[in-house]
Length: 239
Image (tube, rainbow, N blue to C red; front, top):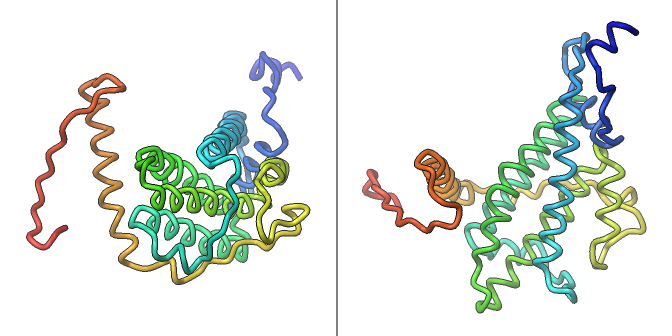
């Protein structure tokens, strides 16, 4: 006990059952021994907060009377940015299912957190803010993609974070196929139609955005600055 008091002078910080569950799953690997780091569940507590805040942002973006009315076939006719995030989502779904089948729970947590942080929040959620509010069709498509990704992601997340995913699922607007509990909803299965090489080509735009963000940090540009960016295309057939 004395050793524990020395190593944890402030005790064990609260992190929540979902964050702890996610952290323990993250530790599951081929190694039998676990050197448990309390910073890990704390980091996943922050991940829970990130999911909650991004959910609120999506709900604020959607109209109050929003009712999903689309099919997956209709989603396939959307813009390159839309198709890119949908492709990334379905690739994540495929890999998560494969990891579950192989009992690679650590891989599951990495795939889920990577998609939400790096693909959805860092790019598409920010991109959605730039859609022309006067273009009703583009705005409606963005709303549909935001909802589709959010609702699908909550079902993908549920086995690893049952309480948070259930809470947010219940807060979703009613839609055709919504179940009484997320536990009764079908677990996501990837649709090969969304995983096409041409959809992945949009990652070049994502790379450019990341590079510009890094450069703005290096030169310490003000947050609301709007600098002109020049791109040098070296490949003659590049678009």
